[in-house]
Length: 306
Image (spheres, rainbow, N blue to C red):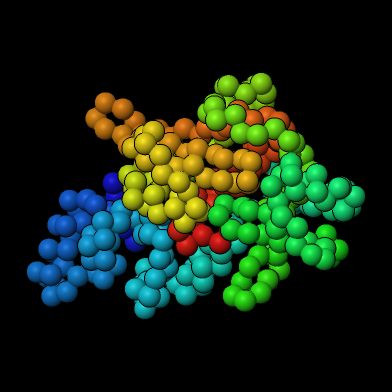
């Protein structure tokens, strides 16, 4: 492939077309090794980006390295500008896009907070496995971390250092409220099912198909990266595939991610499974939204900002 480890696509460069310059290739390619040898021979020193990618067995830095953009890129003067690097850092910190499938920005209905305040606290905590946080809060476990929902201020907080900081993630706020308001008393069934095993399976077709392609593009050739990302979210390793993890989106909502590497006979594939009890706690559209959020965070990797 004519794309270099740094992310530059040599296929659209006239220098490559004219044969003046060849592609560096990925950090896992023979082209990369040949390019390093040529740089040592001709220039006396290699490109530090390509050298790092080859040493760390990183295919493409912008896609596969959790430390991108690192100091090697920032040192410049190329391949990317300071503005591009800054944009990458900012947008990687933003987390799940706060937009609906229609493109509209997510708005958290205030009536959801009002409905939460009116619920019987003991029953709500029993159903959702949330915990009271006096005087006006609820602690809810989300992907291995505690989030604080302040029902008086109608704000979402997360633990930071010795205290709590405002957590400006409307998508996460919305799905937390939906779970708290809809989860019922049913326990885990201990039966794993895929989308087709759910009673509302027809919902998950067309525009509501689960988005697994970004996960495959990121991790099909990087099982170690997938494992790091899953463990970073409190994932529990399972022996169900080449790499498989149970992620606790909420206390009653485990989501199972199963990844198989490809070979000469089969393409890489990824399956997402659920405990059958999820149907008692979330509607089909809420399941779809939650899975998209968790998958987005997984793609962001071990340096993600939940």
